[in-house]
Length: 331
Image (cartoon, rainbow, N blue to C red; front, side, top):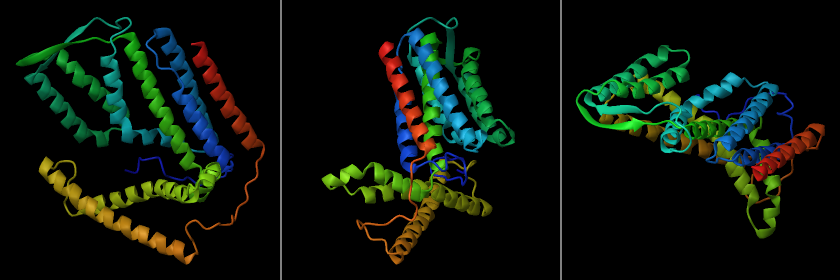
């Protein structure tokens, strides 16, 4: 659970930490729009161009991450929490697209008693040995590959079979979606990594200020958003503490049966909810003691002023967005 990235703040003095929160938030939004504008077509040539463009966007965000003195490895390790989702998405796209040229000759895959037993053995082996493996993501990919590979040479007691056909368009689309999700998560995580709750609240409130003219409670929305983001890692830390406490009493979350897992999850959720409500109550009392009134006008301790880095970041974000729109029109 300590691998979740979104919601954490890493103190620092880099140019990205010092960037005006309004510009930072707006630039992140523009960058996300640029990522979503990368075309996902059915043509091989267009997909290659899209893959190159999205790879460039990923490299840019990794360079920005490094320039902000944030470990790229720490950022990439945070992807472990969604590696199953990424792999599942990749496989679905790979097998569902049937256009283009075959990458390799079709392979007959057998769903048999022997292959199912082999897959179960692989899953058990992964669960037992993954804590001893340094590169777990690579190890996970190897296990997934073997789970399909055993279906090609273990046809004993066969139930059914199917043809495994991998097309170049499907492979390119799968890689494109994989890169897109990865880039989006790294980009959004970079925002909370380098922005304090108060700054994030100020940025959201300032950008949505025009909505106050139509009676939208922007300040309340901004406060709720910033508090929600910051409570994600807090709740995960508390959950991890409870799991360790229960593990010290003999509870095993990995080797239990399905019925025992349900009971364990219930026993885990109840104290998490209790702790959450207690923390919310403490926070409400603290805000009330400090004079926080919903909807009241508040002064700012820090006054933000636009500088060269702010203007440069905004211009570069607009240029990237404009370039992607131009490429999309040309393609």
